[in-house]
Image (cartoon, rainbow, N blue to C red; front, side, top):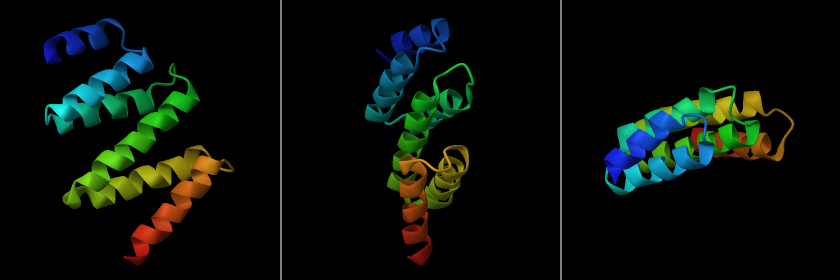
Length: 104
């Protein structure tokens, strides 16, 4: 399943739904680094819709917060959300979480 997912993503790199499914598959198989790389690629691809890029950012925050040594990476991703989605509810939520994490 993992190999097929990788082949499908390679054949359809701008299919955000496929990329999210593959990333979740990687996470279930404890291939977190592969999932993170795929989510980052989605977040950085200007051909992918902004809402899907935001979804990738949010998932990256979740993944980084689940790994105690990656809190700084989660905070960096939250700052990206605040910057790239300024004025949105997502940015406001990211700012709140940044404040909470900074206070801990």
